[in-house]
Image 1 (cartoon, helix red, strand yellow):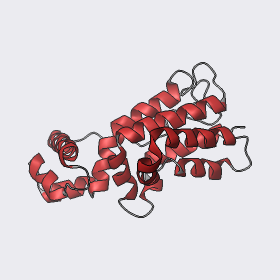
Image 2 (cartoon, helix red, strand yellow):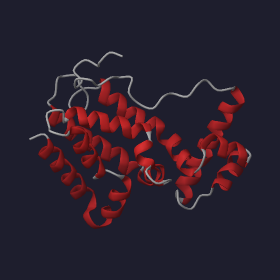
Image 3 (tube, rainbow, N blue to C red):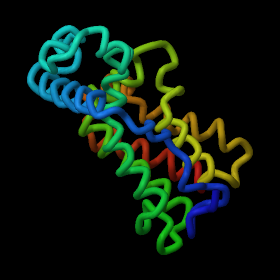
Length: 204
């Protein structure tokens, strides 16, 4: 697969979660109904308070259908976040500087822009992202979106001795569990400033 113009060497627009195969019309309708019901229930009651039984009942589908399609509540969260993640991914791969490659920004500019864009996305969907990342041990690192974030950051840190490890360290500061825990004490501005500082250190 070709590289996106201006992207760090090795970055490919094809990287990211695979799109699902074409669905039967009834399966597609069920999927939409489930996601709409889950989104409404999560908004009204909070992610933690909503059970899979409640989602199935609100969507008008059987529990077996729900569990076969999404696995668990973390799987629902991943599906609900998919479109928002794709917007960030598209901006990274094809968008204008400094987040995207168009305009030939420096790695530092791109990494700072990524930190800000990711925090914007994370803070807007904090409980959903936390559910997707903590539904099972190590779940965060198996999500396709995380693999893209990690690849992007590691490419921006390509001049360092161990960019893969450094990318994991930077992303650890942006995990939903961490941000949710420290946000009440630090506030958004301090969380954001700290993550930007780490990005600057890694691109010094």
